[in-house]
Image 1 (cartoon, helix red, strand yellow):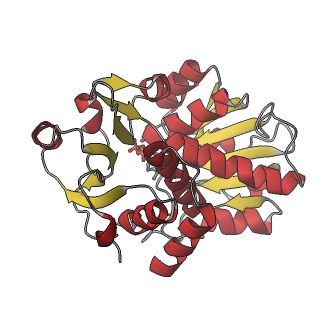
Image 2 (spheres, rainbow, N blue to C red):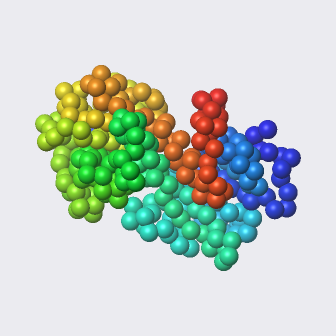
Length: 291
Ligand code: ATR
């Protein structure tokens, strides 16, 4: 049932998620169900791989067309790309790779930032009651990104691309400054963020591991400092409800969890792999069943 065995044939395109460990990944459940429901002749496998370059080299065949990357290979994939999408190049990380059927070349993309930004936009749209025409609901907003690591970079870059005014808040100021310079934003320390209330309606995104299981009692920003935010996003997805989201909700902000980011990543990747719109409700249902 998981692998659509009856549909596999000579034309079936092979995809997979590359990682180690990989056995507990829920992604194959989501993608195989999605492929089946949109009649896409593809299969999606969990691929336990140590040496990414070796793997890519060995399976250099037109039938092996798409890979997603997960821990600890987030960085290794980028070195194996023949081409890199300009957005991924700017962020400095890829999350998936797709083979061009015309020339067999593997192109790397970063879908993580698209997933996170889409989840935030969806949350803002729900808050506003409707979309504001064709523009992003993030446009013109003050968008505070906590953290300046890989995920912080992706969120800050995505915010800038949507026309937000980006503020990078990080424990280590120099890293905040370097990222803020890259995206044309402002840099502050995490300590300064405690007293940062320039205007109402701001949007906050946590990309640090603060509050992640097992340290669920921790939060990157105190409850007092949450009052001027209209929406708070947390990239953490274990637990789904972090202390930050709990306190943001108690402070009257809309909240978006890391699970929404995970789902939106799945939507954009299924679309990229299959070339068809993702069956969003079905993917949500399969994740809920496999949670
Ligand atoms: P990722 O790729 O998931 O973003 P990373 O590159 O290791 O992970 O980045 C982790 C981010 O979380 C960094 O911005 C880090 O802050 P520093 O630059 O000061 O190291 C931040 N971070 C990690 N642990 C933290 C903590 N206990 N308090 C505050 N920030 C923390």
